Amino acid sequence: MTDKQTLRRDLRARLAELPAEEHRAQSATLCRRLAEHPAIQTAQRIGIFIPLPDEPDLMPFYHTLTLPLAVPVEENGLWQFREVTDLRFRSSENHGVHLPIIGKPVPAADLDVILVPGRAFTPDGLRLGRGRGIYDRLLLGTDAHTLGIAFDRQILPALPQEPHDIRIREVLSPQ
Image (cartoon, rainbow, N blue to C red; front, side, top):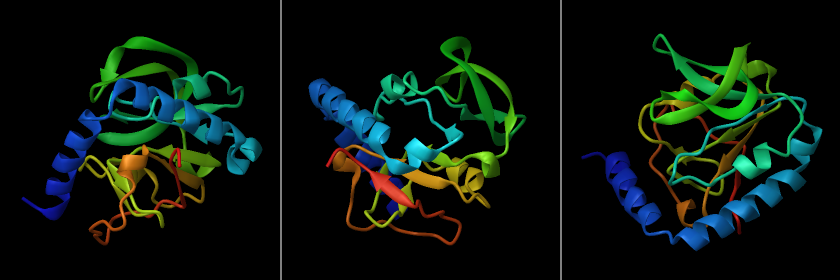
């Protein structure tokens, strides 16, 4: 097992131990911090992610936004952002994630801010994802302000890094 695989397994277990009340409280704090973030306040279009159960719940924050949103979607083996036309979920899934109603493709280069999930982050922007390289490909060539979104227990002092790993500009956690 690689270092990254071992870390992912350990982090999955750490996140499973997060009490529901702490999950809600830290998610609410992240929503407040995002609403106050200067990059969000000046953005014209934001790339979001639909949270999985072990990720911070940002849906309350998304519902406060009136500017255009885009969400990553896999179609025919390629990942791209698609505009969100309605945050209500449709029935289909995208790799286990229920998607909102989506519209036309949005180039990552057209996004001002991209919220990025992960298994773990370092304070200086290294990221450990779920192991499929989705965000490493999505973020290639974009100048968007990338914000890694994490619970406090997902912030680590160091992570293994490979040449294809894309560094996140800023990491946001409740602390």
